[in-house]
Length: 292
Image (cartoon, rainbow, N blue to C red; front, top):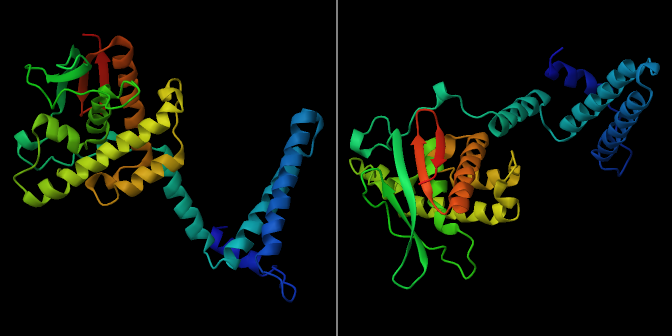
């Protein structure tokens, strides 16, 4: 039985609400009650094990009751259960299934080679002392060419944000997107003025820098993702909203999670070793780091 047919059949047994009663209230409370009954049935299964011979039958029954109330609520809200289920599968795919390599086409594949993000690149983070005596990080390309200006942490409290270009490099490696990295490496797509302005220009750069600062604030409260495998969905959703109008908007939340965690793995290494060398592999969508 498909969900549409099930919902149509379930609604036929839905009782009309009492006068003056919110029609949503009874099925909503019923759903909460049946979830409690399901929990109790599973508790008995855990407690009694094989001795609870009716466990599978009871769990099946309680799940059926939960499904009935879900169908009833969908009807009360004017929703189609088929559509609810399909939307949920899309949401969970976005959150938990990263884009496969064979489906991840680089955003700049049709641009001239000198305007593409390098498919392989090596950059070095080197600490040095600035003119004012503060420690700054100089980022250089493999040929010794500087990539951007020397960076401090730009904070009253030293939090090693001066290594944060690792986040942008991770975005480039895993997502194939980073207007900041394009700026640092001189890879802006100037052959197409509209792309150069909308995707590689100041606003896009500000958005990526904003994402880096936002995630850093979150990461600081979560041990900078050490031994953490997943990021809160709400944070990934916010990033999705911030980038929805950009080419990277097609990337999934799972892709962003992978990019963020890769960036912080590199950042922690750079912080702990006071510098290092980072290698981007856009073909494999990886970012690796070694000591200088």
